[in-house]
Amino acid sequence: MPGIDGIDLCRAIRTNRKDSYTYLIMLTSRSETEFAVEAMNAGADDFIGKPFHPGELEARVRAGKRICELEQLLRQKAIYDALTGIYNRGAIIDILDKAVARQQRDHGGLTLAFADLDHFKQVNDVHGHTAGDIVLREVARRMGQVLRPYDSLGRYGGEELMVVLPGCEANSALEIAERIRKNVCAEPIATDFGAIHASVSIGLAVLSEGMRSTYGDLIQLADRALYVAKNEGRNRVFLAA
Ligand SMILES: Nc1nc2c(ncn2[C@@H]2O[C@H](COP(=O)(O)OP(=O)(O)OP(=O)(O)O)[C@@H](O)[C@H]2O)c(=O)[nH]1
Image 1 (cartoon, rainbow, N blue to C red):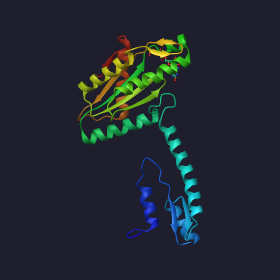
Image 2 (cartoon, helix red, strand yellow; image 1 turned 60 degrees about the vertical axis):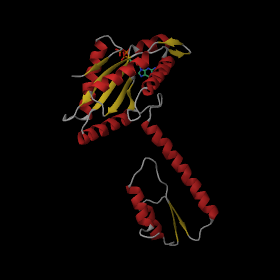
Image 3 (cartoon, helix red, strand yellow; image 1 turned 90 degrees about the horizontal axis):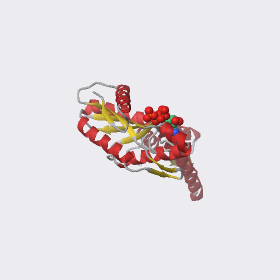
Image 4 (spheres, protein in one colour; image 1 turned 90 degrees about the vertical axis):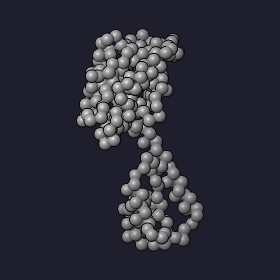
């Protein structure tokens, strides 16, 4: 390869981390063990000496493919919630943390919407946990339906869901939160255990230009706003002052 050798290329690929794993097989005429060790240390996954047997290369590519598929599956499980398919707690907090850092650098607004299903214990008690799971899944789907492509939805825990709304000041935050709220309770959710009415209360915290806050501050603020929304009767949105 002109300009760069295989070892440096491996290092460059490993430094420039992407969302999916790049499986590297080093194909070289150098067969000394030291070179193989150096290549693997630089980030190569496998090593074949030239001249190579095409069948061996194919077999090694297949082995690599199995590893990549497993890696992708693990990555999937690490960031998505198994029940609802939306981001899990760790992933949504990570997204919020990065959004706060970006907001502090680029200015503009950022809103965190903290949503909690209303009287969900009653849904479980009356219709059973399986029905509760269906409701939770459908609520997440309905919330996601009305979001912009650059908003992120995650499950913070139990029946608490979070939406990170980048570039969103108070006015548009209230508008989007109302859209979410209305879409959730628009019609009852059909389950094998009967049609179940669901609604969410939403607390909003807005990080405006010039404010210095951490993601933890935002969560706390949105949580307090959610508490007010619950206290004022549920199925409503409250914006933290
Ligand atoms: N089916 C199901 N239920 C869950 C899940 N996670 C949490 N819950 C239930 O959510 C319910 C939350 O109940 P509470 O915290 O009392 O709140 P609530 O009944 O929604 O009342 P308010 O929030 O005050 O409106 C509990 O019954 C939990 O068991 C889940 O993954 N599946």
